[in-house]
Amino acid sequence: MMKKGGILLLALAGAALSACASGPKYNWGEYSSGLLDYYQDPKTEAAYVKDLDTIITTPDPKGKKVPPGIYAEAGYMAMQKGDTQKAVDLFNREKAAWPESASFMDKAIANAKAGTKPQQPQQQVSAVPVS
Image (cartoon, rainbow, N blue to C red; front, side):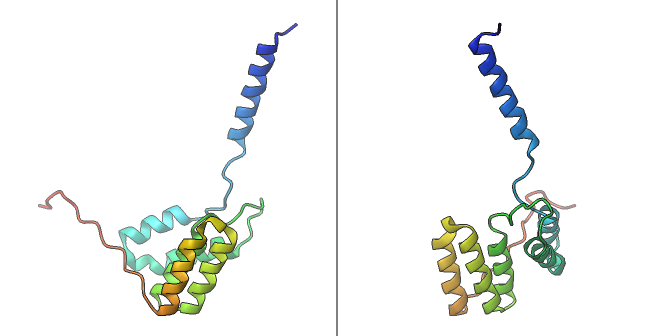
């Protein structure tokens, strides 16, 4: 007969293995590669915005949620284009989906309504001299 410690160890090992098998909780779509492409070449902005829109509008077949920050990022991109109403709508969706973001989203909504455009991301400058 197995001791209680052995049973507990087996139960913990089983729980740990099942947690690893569950995979990501959110549907990130092509977010990582799109963001990297955009940072490396701002001319890919349209493709990046499309990636964000796809994450937001395409239901995940496994029922995964839109990740935290995606609505806000899409709102930020809409603000850069001067689409205040779309930005406010997306900031409100972020706030509804992630209540812990409420104070930040309230500030973003106020900035959008005031017409304050966000700053463009700055290009990183290499510290290594180019020959």
